[in-house]
Amino acid sequence: MKLYELQKSFKEQILSSVPLETPLEVHRYHTFYTLQKTLSRTFKQTKKFLGEKEFSSLAESFIEKSPPPNPYLCLYGKEFPNLLKDPLLKDLATLEWYLQESLNAYEEAGDDFLSRLADINPDRFDELTFVLSPTLRLFKSSYNLKLLFTQEALFEENFIRGEFYFLCKTAGTVAHVLAVPLDQGIFLEALHNGDSLGCAHDKALKQNRDFNLETTLAHHFQERNFVSFLHRT
Amino acid sequence: MVSKIPTAVGVGLRLPHFKDFLETPRPNISWLEVHPENYKIGSSLKILEQIRQDYPLSLHGVGLSLGSPSLDPEHLKFLKSLCDRLNPGLVSEHVAWSVLEGHYLNDLLPLPYTQESLNLLVQNIQQTQEFLGREILVENPSSYLTFHQSTFSEEVFMVEVATRSGCKILLDINNVYVSATNHGFCPRAYIETFRGLDLVKEMHLAGHHRVRADFLVDDHGSAISEEVWDLYEYALKISGPVPTLVEWDNNVPSLEILLGEAKKAEKIMEGIHETV
Image: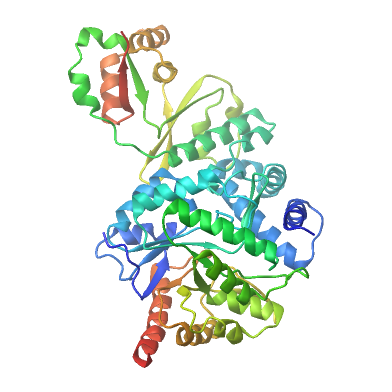
């Protein structure tokens, strides 16, 4: 048997659920153990609500069907939320994936953002588009997912639908979920989609007539949530 | 920033110990080793760069899959970028495979020791060394099965791989002991093969799990066994003192316990230094 055929048969056996002899079982155990651990770490809250057994079974079938395409385990699991049928848990898992993405993103030092901004005529601020920090992930859901990070079980109120924005942000080696007020979420979403500051401001005002652009920008500058801006002429 | 790995004992840097290595005074250890694949995470890489300022560093890969039909050019680029950024004193990988048809199986899978595997490994190691612009070390695997197709013993295969590709050997003492127990060969005879060859440039020490009297699993999840300590002393006598690493990846203990294992290895190495 040629090496490639041998490796192919090895791979098929490891990814199958057929009982294996001890030596091969060791390799299957190693493969599944670390990947299950990776998924459990990334989708910690989702696992809590799904339960150990249900989560393990889903994770196992995910690994069998979608083994990682590369050796970077921190990038593994993006499609896992799609396996979840419950829309609340699917959103929760997606938010947890965004937390992982935020953690993975290298926090590039912003260019000379504020000093460059100081050179711009304030009358032309409306034309600027802002680039969000790569460590930020904005997520919109119909559920108030933030509550689920402090709960041990699901309650009826968790299923009440609405419009909620969340920001995943990394500080040091820890990623956090922040609940974002609706007008701020609309504003950030518009900027993230490439809208100019003026346009994003208008969208936020439609949601909240009292939306304060100055305070909002000061907050995001302080939090280093923008890393750059572009001047559209 | 010192890059050369000293002939002394280092430890594998793992996430639970990041905090210890950022505190002052810095933990007293000669060098550190990391798995490059874990530093795709931007936040971890930033911390590693910080820690790297104070310790010589070795990159020990687990994802290149030298025994696969071809290497992943993207992963090679990633390794090169880490080498450029971190200036490691040593770069090592495994005599194993884990990638096939674009799927990464996340384990160090065994190869039959045949001419075909040898040619493939030599080709892939040479490609890696050329791309990185430096020599690499390859580690002997811990094995649980043998292939009837094999025409070389593992130790002879390792020598052939190193001699033909121009790489050096990372001799994992625990792996030798695990494989010797599982397949019933003499671990000292295995190590004796390397006498006078100047191929072994690093050693690894770790714990294993005993499933049965004649079946061990290399799990890096406990203290180093007495048998492995004895074998380490023997290997140092054969190959001379070389940089040695204590690995502990599962059930990671406090840094104090890990450094205690490193101290034990240092004592053994010092004893050899005195007699060499």
